[in-house]
Length: 167
Image (cartoon, rainbow, N blue to C red; front, side):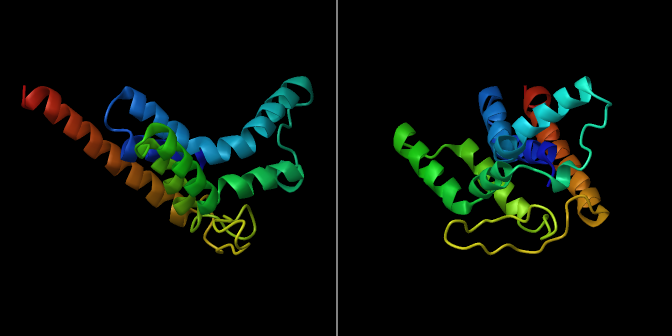
């Protein structure tokens, strides 16, 4: 799935308690992709500003190896479980927002194909990757937009009812 959708899902599913929870959930939702692609994206922006404007010319096929390594680590259920456990020890309770990271991984499993960043959700135990349908395919992309629109409509409707109808 695309990084914006991940942030929006994290936000609406796990961040509905308050503004801090909202932001934290969105951050956990984008974290796996941000860690893997944030630096190369920033370099691409700088490159676009400094030369002929062809920012991502061949980028998909020429990523440095560290991007794949970081992607493999951040998209693993094992990594998420370790971080979740550490956060639980630190805060003495589960950090609800961290479930947005788990949701990110679970959404990526069926929405990435073997051709482009298939999700290594069992790393380091196994290198198995499910051959899903790319999130950019309209069969996935359009329903994704519809689901997000429904979730946000429900969220804002409930918020409106709470603030205006029951007061």
